[in-house]
Length: 131
Image (cartoon, rainbow, N blue to C red):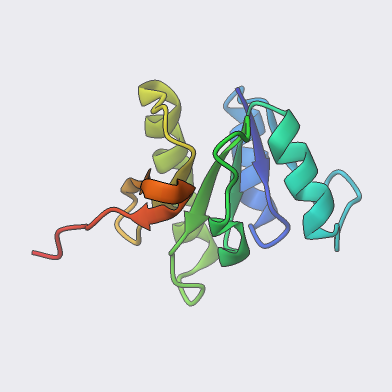
């Protein structure tokens, strides 16, 4: 499955994914820096891919979208190399597990946590144990 990285992700993650043989795209590498969210949403509704973003605006995933959205909760103060390592390992695990849900959080420890859909089609973040 294709992985699409939003422009707010470091290009070294894109390069590492490509070097490892993943079908990865990066909004900047596509020459689409500043791409309107509406265009991204249209692509996410049509294509089966994994979209990694820091943008919480994508919490409004349509239940009928073909794409899966992972919203990173990694602190931006982490060194780029550390963020790349966490994201790369999380995506490797995610690709192996192939979970069916559409919306996820990437937690600071590298765990990818699924949101659940509730009545009325609204998304509800799954409780994550803090202990």
